[in-house]
Image (cartoon, rainbow, N blue to C red; front, side, top):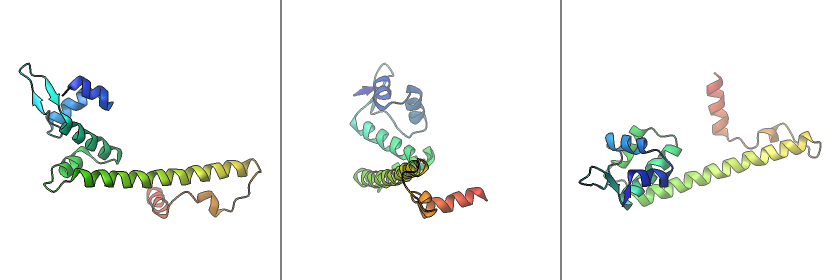
Length: 135
């Protein structure tokens, strides 16, 4: 079992965040001691990990609560989905890094690039999003 302070330190979040998650019903402690202290077990650790992973995907707390509260929520399936999304993001970042590296070489006169190659790392979906924001 972890205390609020121990879990906050382990997860890299604040105690206030844990208190707030408890207050809104997003992450309840596994048990509350006679002294009023909140204690968190492994089930709470897994749930907190899910919360933090969904936050990384820019979901709101309300959306996260709705997802985690579903009767058919499957932790293993969710973790696989997180992994797939992270893999997609890593690949996108690597494409962008390669485009930046190529541009650096181009600007140093060590590599020729076509106009299209300057934007090789950006996906069509990202280009559409940029166009929407510009309008």
